[in-house]
Length: 257
Image (cartoon, rainbow, N blue to C red; front, side, top):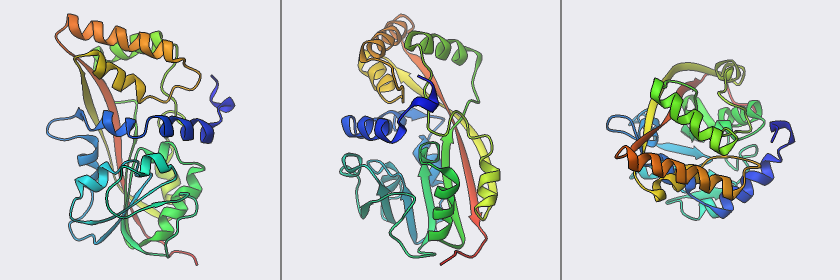
């Protein structure tokens, strides 16, 4: 389905209401060395940060990684938010119910690829951050990948007859530009390759079920999952690559009233 024909708010609402926590279930099992994407994200949070806002928090994996810290989760989906720990608020990321400069850090796991329009989302994140506060976010990426990863991912998308899609498109190539326009100084941009291990049909379904695939039938998803499981059995396990980019930026402009 062409991206300009997708009702993204409706699709995302239905997707996450039907399968709350599906993204977190996948990414919490994806590893690079000794860490998951969530642990990598929170490594950008200073130990001195006292108040953290987790934007598009889902069921709260970031808050769990920051256990013992003051983390407020925000999500617009009640089903997702129901599983989140600690303080949490159902709210629109475009209209956060917090005062100017209320937080030391804003975290966002993959949400910048989903929340729209991105310039307004970044401006609102800047508003609730104190001057000198930090935005730490992860976003989908197209690299790094190994040669074998490309073969596996190409075969998978061929069976799905689609690639995973996001409201922001693929990789957000002008993210640094948009951050600067919103009053941020970009401090870091790094990439990591995570591997999700498929060893059973349940593993395969977890992967395929977490993908945004507007217009793809459940039958096609199941066929793709079956192919993954068969290939994993033949090879005594199959790693599927999930490339992710982490970007850290400091708010430098004074928040507007």
